Length: 311
Image (cartoon, rainbow, N blue to C red; front, side, top):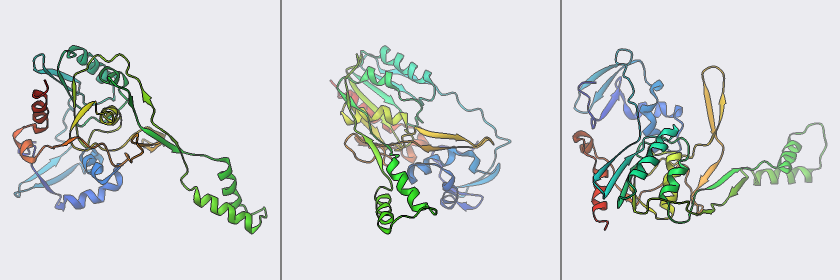
């Protein structure tokens, strides 16, 4: 909308402080942490009325009429270019939700394989399918993915639970006490698989790799970044990723509504928590309000500065 610019600060929606608005709506935002929920707020357009008033810092007010101001979403695609011919290359991958995003990234890596440094920008990448082909092109040392845990279904536990809920059969106090103790002890029993190393599979790029990440790098985006972080194959610049693995069980209610429940829990290969925590960058740097106002990308600028020192 004319008059609203990147870097402007929203103070209220219909005279409701933005913080109060977020807290009221956050129960409708599935997220692994409060930080992730805040980043998703404006991506959930159904949380906003069709018409409302924004008040910005400084007192400016704007009426937003969503019916009158329909916009055509931009068509995202993977893009790449030389930043410094033959030396520094840049690839931006907005998503892995469509196979074409990874396919185009793979093609660009082949185009830029002679570069000394390859910068991959996966900020705001909302995931999709794990980009295994892209990983294999870039990973030139043994690597590992996540440790995985899944709910453990045990016939023994089911028997003890049925014993405690039984009304028709008689069990001794000892049996019921033992069943109670077992079911309380194994309330959240999980089957865990440790991360195993995989061997490189014909990588074609052996130069320096730099990833640009932020809190909207999620799911398959984090699948891409994690092994490079774990094996120190790449430098991560930016902000901590979202910390959400995806892989949900979907249920369609048949009335236009669906819900999804996570089917597994991921941890880092060393067992440290990942869900709701995310992957921390090696160098923490984020876009400031001034960056947004001036159109400056200080994160990319930092990556270029690091690449220029790579001999």
